[in-house]
Image (cartoon, rainbow, N blue to C red; front, side, top):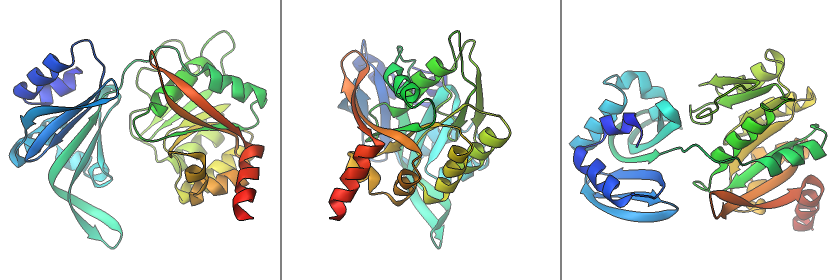
Length: 296
């Protein structure tokens, strides 16, 4: 278990997790006020005996933030806390809003800790797709949450930015998660904490990127920045939450990117044995025919 979690979580919870997780992969730890906590172990939900009080959750959050909750208020309002070692903590509670904008989150009652792992070599299939497009178009990876999109993106970065003929790769790490374990002699720059829109613009115009990599796209306001980078000749590898191609292309922001021809292929992924993935590849032309068929 990462050191920051050992220092933040109650000893009784750590002991229960350690006993259950022997030889298994801890993917998520979920702590709920007045309800039993749970784990995702090697893809399976496992209920725990530990039940947190509201005060205990408050203490956990305070320790994670090293007593400086104010320093994390912006991201807490967006639903998460970024910790060292690529750990992202989802938080939920009682929100105070000004119109559609959340200006404060109080009485946090749910914590979802996503635990990243150093992945074996993955991503060759995605990189081969990029090469088949002569790096003129990007690739969009999609799947429901928790399947491994971020791990796959990291694998792609290690391949593209490494080796004997590396490409200038820029990672837009908005939530401090994507850059985890990107180590070694890589031709890589990581823009950590940047909003995607601004990070993409900097990567394109200031960092002279040959490849841009970012996680969890789909916002309409980001779409124009992605189109701009594409028009500058910089391909993008990105991920998005979706359970199917039709769900993916039904999102307004993704549809705008599709119409601009940003991605040469859409790749749905699912878990395969031994920490690998199954790939469902749809080329841009086939996706376009699918959309046209839905409109008839």
